[in-house]
Structure formats: C-alpha cells, structure tokens
Image 1 (cartoon, rainbow, N blue to C red):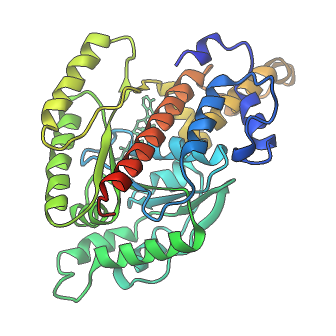
Image 2: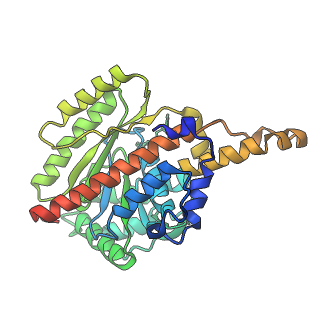
Image 3: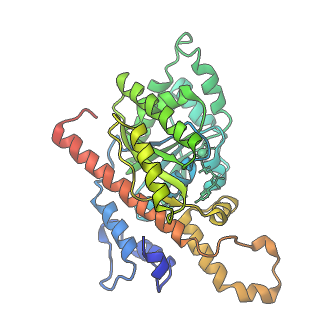
Length: 354
Ligand SMILES: Nc1ncnc2c1ncn2[C@@H]1O[C@H](COP(=O)(O)OP(=O)(O)OP(=O)(O)O)[C@@H](O)[C@H]1O
Ligand SMILES: [Mg+2]
C-alpha cells in the first residue's frame, strides 16, 4: 500500500467522493479522480456481484486478541462506505465489536441468543453506519454455550436455528456481505458458526500461542467439513505485524502454511501493521479505521484553534497518522473481496454445492 505515505491529498476526499456519487455502480463519478486506491477498492466492490444468499464470512481463531473484531469492524466499514449493504453478527459474549468498535449499546446479545436457542426471528440494529446493520453480541450468549452441552437432549439445534434465522434475515434484507465475529472460547457456538458460514477467515499474531490457535481452528474446520459443512477457508491474515520485518513475517507465514497443509488455505499477502496508538483511538472513540483517518485530519486542522481555546487532553487523539493502518485494511478488504469473487466463480463453474 503506497498511497498513504505519498498522498498529496486527504483520505477524507475519496470517502466524500464515494458518498457523493450516485451509487457504487456510478463510480467514479468524475473524470479527474484523485483517489486511485479508493477507486481500486470501489471497482473491486463493483465487480463483486450483488447480494448472494451465502456470502457469509466467519472470522475466527480460538486464541483471543488476534484481531478478529478489529478486522470485522474495518472490513465491514469499508465495504459499507463503498456503497454495499453489510451485516455484522457479533457472536461473542464480550461484545467488543458492538460496544467498543462500533459504539452501539445493543441488547447484550439477547436477540441472537433467542435466535440460536428458539429460532426467534433476527432483527438487526439498522444503519449503525450508513449501509451497515448489526446483530449485537453480549453476555446473553454465555447461556447458549452453557445450553449447547445438553442441547441435543433438550431438543435444541443451535446450528439449524442459526442457519434458519440468519438465512431468513439475509433473504429479506439482501445483504451484499455478512461478517460474523466470534469469541475466543465457546467451542459449541464456534462449531455452529462453522456449520453455517460459507467462508472462514483466520487472523493471527506471530506468537506461538496465536499460531496454536490457528492449528486448533484448522482442525475444527476440517472436522466441520467432514460433518457436512460447505465452509471454505478463505485465508489467514497476519495481524499486529511489523511490515518491515520481512524475514520474520516470511518465517511466520511458512509456519502457518505448514499448519494448514491439507486445508487448501492461502495466506493473505496484505498484513495489518502494529499501530497501538491508533488501536487505542479506534476503541475509545468507537471508530472504524477510515473514520479515524478523517478524525485525525480534522484534529490536525483544528489543533491551533484548540490550543488557543486551551481545550484539555480529553479531546486528544493518540495517533497522528492512522492512514497507514487504514491502508492495510483497505488492501485486505480488496483481497478478501477478490477471493470471494474467485471462490464464487469457481463454485459456479465446478457446480460445487453451496
Ligand atoms: N493494528 C494494531 N496494532 C496493535 N494492536 C491492535 C491493533 N489493532 C487493534 N489492536 C488491539 O489488539 C487487541 C486485540 O484486538 P481484537 O479485539 O480485534 O482481537 P480479537 O481477536 O477480537 O480478541 P478477542 O478474542 O478477545 O475477541 C485490542 O486491544 C485492540 O485494541
Ligand atoms: Mg473480538
């Protein structure tokens, strides 16, 4: 991603440009487009066919803190920004993406929990961002995990309930993309998600514990497929990495390759760089990465004014230029959409069961 480091114009411009256009199919809406990277993302989005009933991507790793929620929030925000309809399902009792990333209070996971247990229809929180709907997560999901152990005896089929309620919602709303964020634990719920989702994306850090999480998940994924799931492994993405540590990154990626032998998975060439300052801002201000770039630009613009007015540190942003991080997410989003399109084309030509 070269643009953020050499951009002579603001990141806010392409976003305004996209929002001002008459819709994704009309983009670019003017000839002298000065936002080529966004243009590339938008054209990738345009190539992605309109809503597919099974374009459901589960983001999972049994290890915590590997970037699952951060990636779901960023990718969902970018695809929605590009004019497509996105649904985020927060299937984590911690509700990090609901509360911290998207800044939604939610229902503490009650609606999702009722859908999983009793197939009650799902009703999303609408337009938490333009074009982005959310099924909130939260503590009520702990019940589902607890019940799952005895679910069969109690006549509950969490996986069938989830497939039915999510399917009905997607048919009604015709989302272009559904992203499911999962928690680090709760294996029974994870198994239900692996049975329902069509694609799996696995983020990892480069430490041994995270890589063990990848290994555990790969085994779970293969078991899910043996049990009849049609889920496909979209790839593994390196999170919180140093883009300059090329030798180390190559070593980690080859380790991941070995862990995934037999799964058919490929590693994403885009990685998400370490940026702790931006990470703090994203969560405390409940922003997606592209929103943070705009906020940082506004912040810089009004710095002198704020100094004059002696506005205190409460308004402070820790990150100076989060556009590098946002650029990583932009590249990852493009890669994900390209892989989805390729997988869909492959499924059509080979007549693979969907
Ligand atoms: N680019 C980044 N560099 C460093 N840290 C980051 C970055 N982005 C996010 N973080 C931080 O990394 C931590 C883990 O991120 P995140 O919550 O997305 O992971 P997770 O896999 O969803 O975790 P959990 O399993 O607990 O749900 C968070 O504290 C987040 O603020
Ligand atoms: Mg999370």
